[in-house]
Image: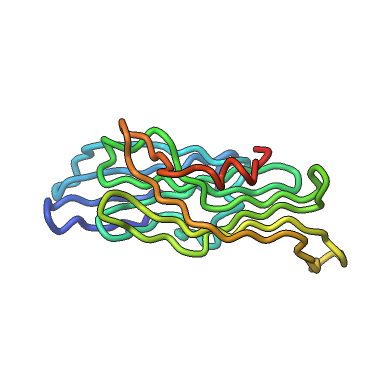
Length: 181
């Protein structure tokens, strides 16, 4: 199974090949031309499983002139999503951008949660609006949990490409929340 986007300007396709049935799956993207010749191929790491994908093709999208693939980080009481945002598969930036992080039972607080509330392309990069929460899990059963936020922060980070790396114009808030991962 696969999902693809056609680039109308240059006559090529960006193709995501689903291999989530494998244990420790990597996410593979192909760039092919109109006669199905592979121009580029890249695999993107994933954790033990794709905890950050909501459906079979949820983690591969096109936004404006960019494509992105979501990579998951996994662990006990932990799930994270990083976005690899790129225009050309041969020139994928060296580092992803954090989309969200969830951790329960770490440090002084039973949960930490960083989520992206909005992603917007800008003239020189991309803007992420984040919500960060620390809190307690007040009611736990086998199917649901009730969360009580103790600290909530909302902030925006503008990322630009510098030497093929996504770089925050101002990383003060990212350093202030001090995620332990």
